[in-house]
Length: 352
Image (tube, rainbow, N blue to C red; front, side, top):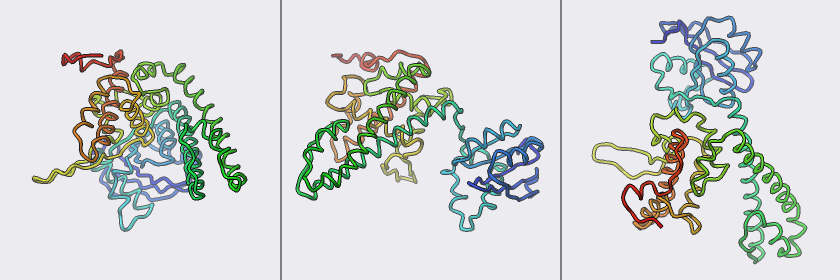
């Protein structure tokens, strides 16, 4: 039972938001709509007695939750992916969604799988990494497109680092494609310059404002972008009781579907932040690759890969990424110095 006399569910929209107010007995006191603006929300909730306000994760949930919290209300932001009873409702409307949010909160707040939005500073800093990631993905799409177009004319462009793609491949284009693809090469040059600007900004930000990145960068394969994205996404290492929970948080844990004697092997959940999960997987690829330094993580992954099987390498990469996330959280939370052979020393294995 809520300690507040009223529970308010809000279904946020770009222009208008639906509101449902329930009393202590669960009866509907009010159902209304208001504009999704700072002014309208302040006028509506500023004079109200403190209430439990329930939102879903979405584009507007971060700033609205901060605003209502400043106005004296307790705000709960539910994980939209876990609220299947709302997004799979056959009679789905904004009014019913707002009412469902309020009723779930009255029944058991744990069913909302509450999330905590990061601070304004962390959110702003993380947007730099997201913007860079967007440019990198666009550059990759253009490169793939150019390679596929050239193949249709009977040629294959040589493999090379993306940063040198324009310089090495543009002179090799057939004369008839030079004019067609020249604008794409111009865009690639601009993208490369802007990505370099973001790289410099992110590196400086990690060094100046987030000194804990230095601890994480001691791990081979973890650069400033991976370290900073990891820290900004979690923000507070104390939010996890144990470091082992971090792997699940980033969706690197296998799904479970146990029933009786049935316990199939399933793929990972892929919950949580997609960008950070991809960065962790990229770091795992480096650790297991030709240039990866010898360490506990590499030995752990190679041991899994040597078991053979169709997907042994893929399972090894995911396992190393999961273990890497646990290690990064542990170093960050405890302020420990990274020892690449901590496990090997404990077991008495040879080093070097």
